[in-house]
Image (cartoon, rainbow, N blue to C red; front, top):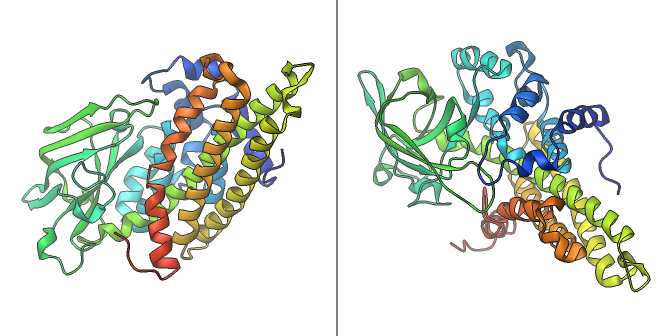
Length: 382
């Protein structure tokens, strides 16, 4: 299979790390184990600090290069969800954080002393309607008092820092729904009033719900200006969509490679099953879908790195890649037949892992609604 050939040295380096963490390693973490050894190895190799500028001890990489890192993790059979937030959260911190915040946090994140993996946005009563979140941050003499609840905050139990979106002005008092939201970055370790509860799910995603009961964080935790937080996290969300697209492309590559090898080796009725169009065509179609998604991913990343508007391309990349990886894993499961359900082939694991990305971090229906309204000029559908 032919995919993007750029960044070969980077891809080789990531694969060298991933070779030490094979299928049995990932299967051994089911249902909810955290790959600490894997994350430590990526950190030691500098890949989790890729987006941090060199002046703060990082790699100074582009989002394009970061997307390649996550793609190769997925293509190796690994699960990048264990560490991807430390990359996409960087967009908010790097573009809108203060110089003291960057000097304080970035070198320690780059060295692995601190981990920034928790992104507190989604709430049970708001879901994808982010402007309706109710978690409240109120000024106090000691800083900010936080009350509320977040859900689907993945890796909160394995993160030292959290990037949090909270209301600093009630929704009813704002001229626009996106006003009155503020972003905070703080150390979440041993915080009185902070409770984290795991959410068991069908895939190993280490996700949680987080409760804030009179949690006090320092004044310096505020990122940028009060009330402009929604605009700040958009940088993180566009990066997130691009990086998730790259993971889906990696998942698709992994399962297609397995399926192609199996279709060439497995013989039924005297010939390889890959000679049958019912096996061959779904694999070929999935490959075409993945290649197309790959091109849109790189275009979205190019625009992001250039500081240009990229919401259209980032959303399309996530949509196309998640649909393509799902087509690929379904074709791979059909190709393997009953063996596709056997855990030792890793197809059923990828089937569960990649299915998530049609509904998260944004539902594909909302991507279509965005494109319909903001790109095609159609009436708002929700």
